[in-house]
Image (cartoon, rainbow, N blue to C red; front, side):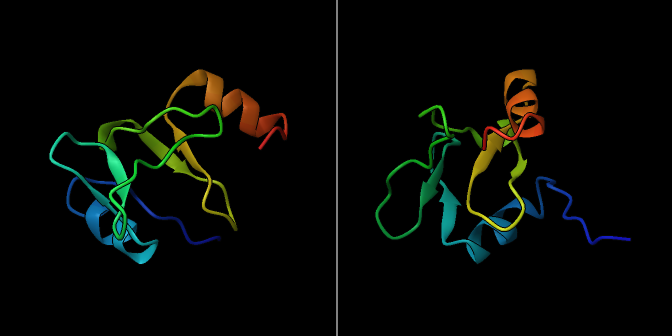
Length: 77
């Protein structure tokens, strides 16, 4: 069985911290050092409640929408 991370309200800040990210006052995932928003491959900001996951072995952050899931499954990321 492969290990999985569960993104909950309590665990998300700790997971993001491991990647040098945090959540700003507007709920957007940002780079902790610069305050710049983390963007999806499509160039969109990600609200913490919209985070679907990270592509394995990368820092590609994905939204929890059908478009992102389809692109991931089709190997576009």
